[in-house]
Image (cartoon, rainbow, N blue to C red):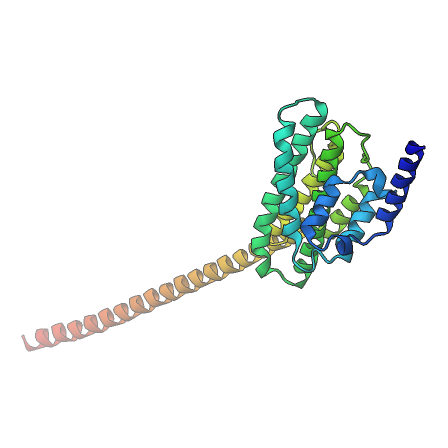
Length: 276
């Protein structure tokens, strides 16, 4: 009877979690992150974890209210603590968990560089960066949940299609392609998705230029250079032509002066001979 009562309590708890507002139950954002760290996915009772996390991030205005880095740094601190445990026991699951933590730290490092550049973003870039931050927050929580799943050797809740829709949407927004990455066991979907987010961050660092815009800029630069050199060449030829005209005029003047001198000298000779 005790077992039945326990199962009933767990079921009620699952229903309660499914309906609660985390912001109401956990006013501090750090408390919400620790809730995700401690809860089991079975108790969340959510068929689509990605949609649940996305709604949570949007509903609580985590990105819009500038709380992105609070979440990211809190997740990073929790994962640093878990790394101490993981490093003591190397099996395929713990190795995958360590790789996930390392990948997330790489993404956070690149994203922090983008954060420093956002003061120069235009309106379109700001909108893209907000979406990028939402994905950064979500994937940070997903990495935390995945690490816990691996540590507990539970069934993987992600698969090859878990990030599929989000990847396609990001590629269309940022006009980039999925970078080629090596096949990684267990965490390959995470590996691909984080690699894509890193490409987005690099694009921000490159002043948010898509490959098409870069090609246009290069073409524009070439046209400017061609115009510059054409003007330089034209100016040189004009100067050269002016120099030639000047030389011809000086030569003509000198010839004329010489001719006048010869005429004067001829008259002088004739006059002298007539006197003699």
